[in-house]
Every structure is written in structure tokens, then in C-alpha cells.
Length: 119
Ligand SMILES: [Zn+2]
Image (cartoon, rainbow, N blue to C red; front, side, top):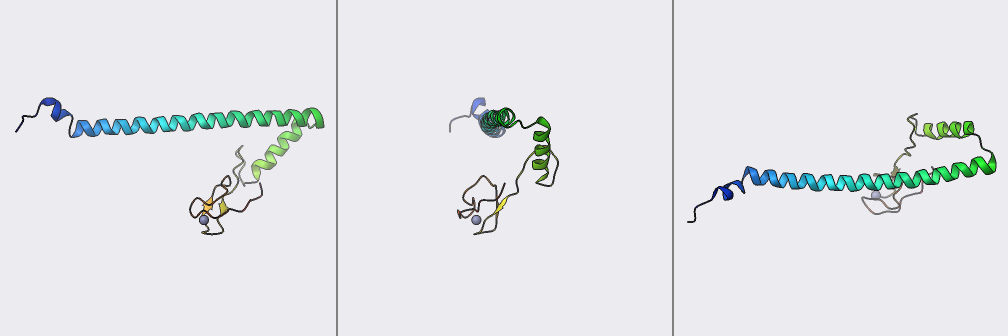
């Protein structure tokens, strides 16, 4: 029977488990960073579209900033909370009755077509 070296001992047990935990944490951190980068890109695109739409409304239809702010408040309150965000309610699947985010076209759970809910 070959004798174990100190290296073999360190490569097993608690040290190895700590290494694996570290690798998992690094992988999760990488996924979180990619997700955050994707969200940042999405926010940038949405900001671009909102800015262009606002400038068209202001310049071509003479919509005032006060009218824009009033509409922002109205839309903000549609979900029952004045929180500076628009969070449309989830859509219930006609097949399984489970809640799905409005951005989905098909149910995440059973694949049924989801109804198009009003904004
Ligand atoms: Zn379903």
C-alpha cells in the first residue's frame, strides 16, 4: 500500500470540499454578472426607445412635461402601488391556472398558449 503524501491528504476531505464550493461560487458569480450585464443592456435599449418616443411626442404633438408626468403617475398606479415602476400582474394559464409573467407567450409549466393581457 502506497503511503499518502501530505498533498493527497490536503486534496481530499475539507480542503477539496472548500475548493469545490469555491468553484461553484465563482460559477454562480459569473452567471450573476452575465445576467446583470444583460439587464443593463436591456435598460439601455429601453431608455433609448423611451427617449426617442418622448422627443417625438414633445416635438411633433407639443405634449408638455406636465402631461408626461401625469401619465407616468397614472400608469404607475395601475398596479395599485405608487412606486415609480410598472409591474403588470401575472397572467393565469388557461390550462393549469398557474401564474406566468406577462412576457411569456406559452405557459412555463404546461406549454399552453397564454392569453394576451391588456397592458
Ligand atoms: Zn399552464
